[in-house]
Image (cartoon, rainbow, N blue to C red):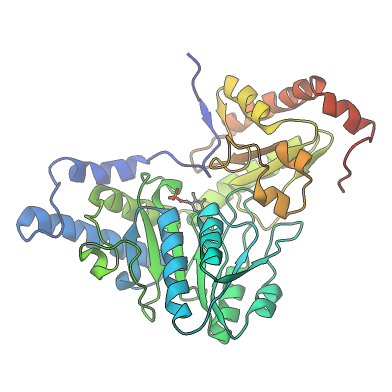
Length: 398
Ligand SMILES: *Cc1c(COP(=O)(O)O)cnc(C)c1O
């Protein structure tokens, strides 16, 4: 049987770390109390949850009372954006600002709000995949309710000038949310120093389990609930809390934030090595800024290659990677992220995302670099498109 031996798709999800698993196990077994119950078993669960909340708050540089546990990044994004939009609409502000290459949890939420009559400005991200703070400043109007810009892009790994954008929003008195799902553990985050009013993060991208996440909300704001029901999360988010997941997330974010520098020091040389080798393949493009990107992320386009075929060939070698976003694979539309940085459809289709973690080894990268050039060559030799490309008969890109 084929198996995945080399996991290079950490932007899609990550394995649960031993630290996280060990912290969770007691709450999956004997510590199963409902934190709303008043007897000891319940109170113990509540105490564990509040400890996890303090850990998250410490990692982000805020108060524990500003942390809300959710079911993940998608819920946090939906909640922050929808509730802020409705809160501000009541004050006559119905304009929202975001970027063209946000995660679908943000973009589809914006589309839903457009149907309700909100107006949305989608800022460009240019060829290198970076939002310009001046564009944010220019886009802000009297009736702007919210600016939401992701901290780091999930497909091409580019890091956005979040502190600068936060400062502009603060000066203009506009609420600022960031989807930091990919950034946590890769970038130093401090919500107060960086003028962030709301921030989304997700457990399963930082070695905690799937189905648990966080929304940080500055205590100046009181968001209406997205999920109604019980009085959990100080009446803001109903539903019996996912205690094992929350406890694991507390450990995961502590580890992730303590290891940012060590992780980058380890991954940067690996990233450089991959870029140097892969860019030797003709008609290959590195997507996203060369420098202003997370050390864990690489995204290439190979002209004349079909991304899906590339993934299948890598899978045969036991290597898991991704083409565009995992959420969109299965659809034939090219990634909106790659289109937003100006790639033609044909080139966007031939993209490969490699996303590493602190567990990635040099030997794994050796293996990738050993097989990838041959796979690209083989697929091109079978592609009718490639003939046209090398004769210069098709699309042009710089
Ligand atoms: C994965 C991801 C999400 C969604 O998080 P879930 O916990 O899977 O719902 C949102 N935004 C970004 C940038 C992501 O990478």
